[in-house]
Image 1: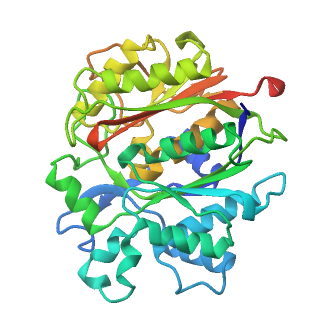
Image 2 (image 1 turned 90 degrees about the horizontal axis):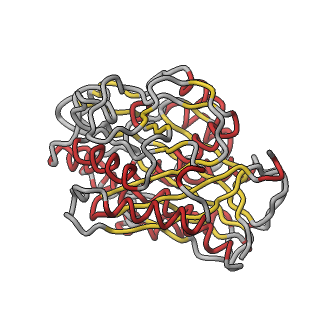
Length: 386
């Protein structure tokens, strides 16, 4: 079985463009979320985060000067982050023999809005159609693979890409994820009464729900070690089959994914130095995660949620949070859980309340989503780069 290494990456969020711009604001505890008053998304104000659309339009035009009207906003985000991740590589790859995986929950769902009707062909709303356009643009010989499994999509996409490399199916896999704000998404979460009217507070006793956000990111996985100091050890997914939207109340599904990922990685819980949690700031999710971490004997490990910085970015969440945690591990710095002040879950997990220096050699990323889905993946500094 081949080893899997993490190489070039790039992300766009409400905090900014690129790794460094995002990391600076994360370490500086700056949130990209705010109250949004825009009837395009919802008749009432809601708390969330948006990419700077004007800046992105300018950046995209500079990168692709002849593609201003051929692609939707969602597709442009994917094109942009894939191109940037390739540019950030320290070695060349043959795109014709590279697999691209897209992780997203809703893709072009904004095209269903009345204001968008007739602007694009009807099939454009489907994720497989966006995948075709990405494949055509980069002249890929392999069909672009779509992973759309609720909010674990980003973590699962990295997991699937890693397995395909480990078994020798591909040498390189580019994982790209994106989700955008839309009337469909905002109204859907409002119907669940799960949105907070203020900045979300993961794991806090006063948490009142989640914030929504939009983001895009890409990273390159490869069996080539080259200059990469980070590798993917193991991963797993599970389904607790509890409810169409509510997670298991006892954390057994996520625990199963975590334990399976540890087993595949051939490490024990005491070797984990950081947990990047899903941490949506809803009552049920945070409580469930605390129980799962307790079952896995991970209560003493520093755990953070990044949702207070940019909200829940759906299919992009697991990917952007993995990329940020990889950078955090490289720099041996913990990022605080923005919004967390008073412990609000039943298990005594070690929520990071202040950003600080901390030795990180191995970290666990978790995710959970509608339909009872759960995912866990483990990243580690490669021993030759210690």
